[in-house]
Image 1 (cartoon, rainbow, N blue to C red):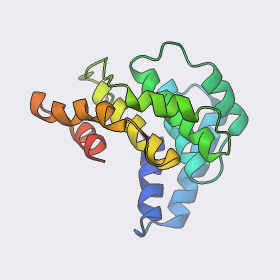
Image 2 (image 1 turned 90 degrees about the horizontal axis):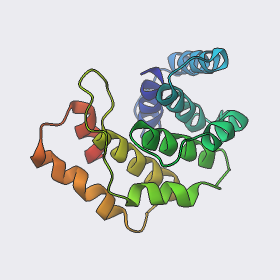
Image 3 (image 1 turned 90 degrees about the vertical axis):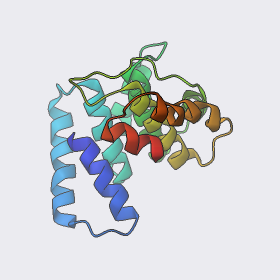
Length: 169
């Protein structure tokens, strides 16, 4: 959750909203220390790496290892994790996964459903992947078929607040 919070604060700052620089720096320092200790769940670590890359302090060698170790095929949370890691690498200047990131979001996959006791859902994962791809790659050909099921799901069932936010973003 702290990595996600840092990403949101960095995005808000980039959009011109006032963000306390000292608190943001403290949060980014905490994420750096927490990653160095290890033991974070994989998706949590991916969010932390995404935040550090947005802040201009990516841990490139570690990102490369994590990206290389992603399971194949990508299912469930690993799709969101891949999008976060690949976009962080892209921000760090390593563009080897650009085509993978674009392909990830042009596929209409939201498998995994919603986990009632967790923050993650397939819909949110696909929306995060789409948002990351557009942010680092610009317009992605074929994005609409990957996003359309997310928008369509607004009618299919009640989305959680994070799902709704990521879908509309």
